[in-house]
Image (cartoon, rainbow, N blue to C red; front, side, top):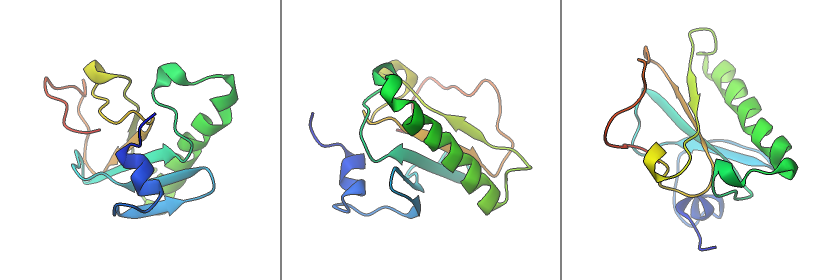
Length: 121
């Protein structure tokens, strides 16, 4: 398994605007934001895609959602609303093979949330 950009961010080999970190996860600003608030929440232990999530990963994946809710509350948009998205594989827009939640907020988010050209990882 070759190193991803997220591994390099975790290892502090490349810069990122980190907004949260604990033993299991890291959250940072997306470099190509699709909303006024666009954070990526990643597990520190790499799981390549949702298809690779196993029974042993339930706590890790659940933790990502706990972090999303915590950040929404701390940043003050929990009551207004926000969206969390996790893409799986290329046709769904996944370009970094290390699962991650997109946390989007700060504007009214339309539905359906798709476009013909993926714009974020």
